[in-house]
Length: 617
Image (cartoon, rainbow, N blue to C red; front, side, top):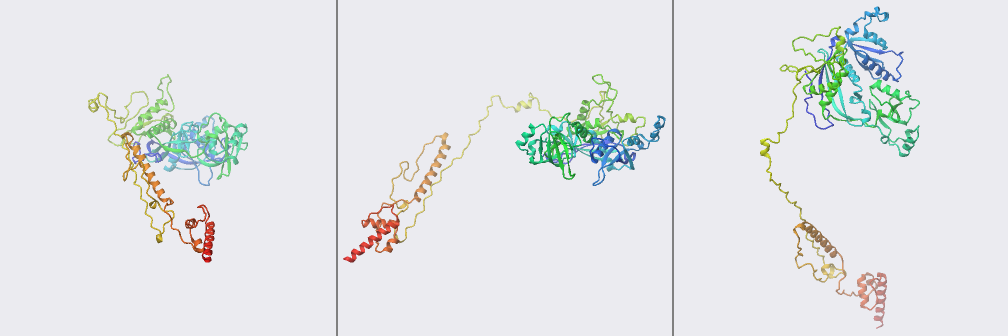
C-alpha cells in the first residue's frame, strides 16, 4: 500500500502536532534475519574521542553501522552496563564460512564468516543468538537510519534537523521526527515522517546575565574567565540531548581538567558521537563548563553546542516538500538494509519532488554518462523497482553472485494507489525513455483578460465611483441645570445671619439671557458638531457654577433683630452676630474681626454697667 498523508483532521495552529506522511520500505523478512547481542570487550583500548561508557558504546554502534551490513542499536537499561549492542543481520551472512581464508594464508580466519571476522576485529563478542523480533527490528532500523542521515539531518532530542550549519544559523530550519514500524512476515517497514520547523537559539552572554564590567574585563584579557559567582542565569541546555545543566565557568581557553586539549579533539568527538560538523576553527568563541547534578561532575562544551532554552518547534509550511527532501536523502544515504536493496514506495504527490531532488544529487543508472562526460555514478545507483502483481508469488531473492550489485543500488518505486483497480506507475530516474509520471493536480488558472464573460462583468468606461456618505457624528446636548433644593426655615421663626441665595434680594438678569429662554447662537453647518459640544460644555459649567453659588452663604442686607442681653450667662450663650448687633446698638465700639471672648467681655461689662445704673436710680 502506498503511503499518504494522515486522514485525520488537523488544526491550522502551529502548536498542533503535524500530520504524519507515511512511506513503505521493502526490507528483508524476519524469517531471514538473526538478532544477537554484541558485547564490548572491557580490555579494548578506547578511542580518544570517547571519554565515558556512554560515549564508547555510541562510538561502537556508529562504527558497526558504517563498516558492516547490519542494523544496530544500543542496549541501555536503567542502571545496567553500557557495553551491549543489539545487532540485526542476515542469517546467511552469519552462517557462511569463509573458505578462502586458509588458501590465502589467514589460518585464524579459516572457517569464519566475514561478518564474524569483522566483529572480532572490532573487539565485539557475539552472544545470545536468536531469531529477530519486530520490536528489535524496528528499533535497530530507526537508530541506523538516523545515524546514516548525519550531517544532512542532525539529531536534536527526538528530531532530525536539516543542514550542517544549524548550530549557528539561529533561523527556522526544516526538521522531521521518525517512527518506524515493521511487519516482519511480509518484509515491510512503515516509516512515519512528521515534518516541522525548528529554531535553535544560539547562546549569548546576555542570556546568562553577566554584568557589563565583568564582560568588559573578560573581553580585554587574553585569558579571560567568568566565574560562577558572576553569572546571574547559569542554566543552559546541551546538544543533542537538550539536558539542562548549570554553568560553572566561561573561559577563552580550554580548561586544564578537560580531557580534550585541542579544538580539533572537540570536532572529532562531535563527529564520531553524533555526526555534527563543527566549524574548522573555534572563531574566538569561549568554552563553557557545565555541571550536571545527576552525573555529579562538570563537562566542557564548545560555545556552539549550547542553547539557552529548548528549541521552538512549529508546523511545517509545506510538509510534502520537507518529506520529499528527507526521502531523497534516504535514497542516497541508506540504499540497502542488511546488504539487500530496500525500495521505497511513495505516494503519488511525492513522486515528482523526490525525482527532481534525486536528479539534482546526480543519482542515475550505473554506466550512464553524465552531461560533463562522466561515465556515471556507481554508488548509489538508482534502478526502477519491479513490482510483482498480486498472486504471482514472492519476488525472487537476489543470489549470492549478485549481492554486490544489489548493495550498490537504491531503487525507488513510486505508486499512486494500492487498490487493485489501478496499476502502479513506475518512475525511472535515468534519461532513458520511461513511463510518464503520475498525473498531479493542476491549479485552476484565471480566465484571460479578453474573455467574453469577463467583458460583460466589467464596469463601463465612464463609470465614476460614488463618494462615501458623510460621516455622521453624534451631537451632544447639554443637560438642564438641576434646581437647588429649597431650604427649610429656621426653627422659631429666626432668620440666619448667612441665608441662602433664595433669601437674597433679586439680582438683575444677565445680559446674555432672556427670561425663560436660552441665548440663541447662530452656527455654521460645518462647525455644528464643535459648536454643539462647546455649548453643552458651557451649559454644564454654568450649571455647576449656579450650584456652587447657591451653596455659598452670602451676608444679607436686612437688619438683624437685636437680642436682649441682661445677664452674663445670656452674653456667653449669644452668637458673634448677636453680640456684634447688641454692642453696636449700645454704642460700644467693636469689629467683626474681634474674637468672641473679647466680645463677651465687652458685653458683660456693658450689662454690669447698665445693672449698676438701674440700681442707682
